[in-house]
Image (cartoon, rainbow, N blue to C red; front, side, top):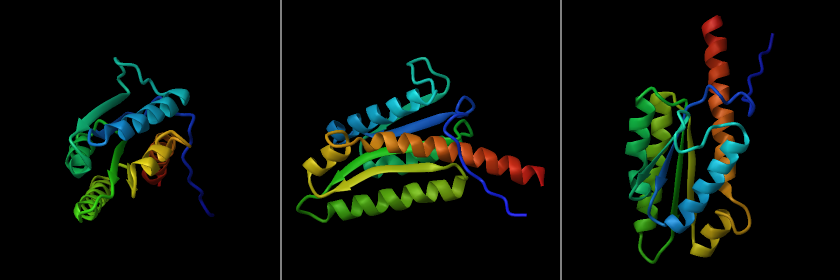
Length: 165
């Protein structure tokens, strides 16, 4: 018999979530964080300053996201980690290096720890594009929050199903 596994957005009380935010381009990342927290709160996650359900860690830039994400994922305290950053293309190859290392590092954390990591790093050609994705047109932070809820829930379902068999 075929099994179908899906995450839900309603059973979030058991989730502990960490958000790792890059300070570089904080005009953009601050807006992503606001959108993400709004989504989580509207779906029942306690986002208050004394929350036992959510922690936020700030890092200097996108390049530093993987190491802090890995530390949090390995702590065993979180069911899902969200990374937020913005890397905007300039006139040097620095953009390509930062994007490649951040994305590879973040992806490897998820694979190595079994903790879902949401990749919320904008990679744009201009500041205008980044601002559009962080709130002028729509706030992708909201989508990253939804992805975290779905993946955290899905992993709980999968772990329950595989331990029962």
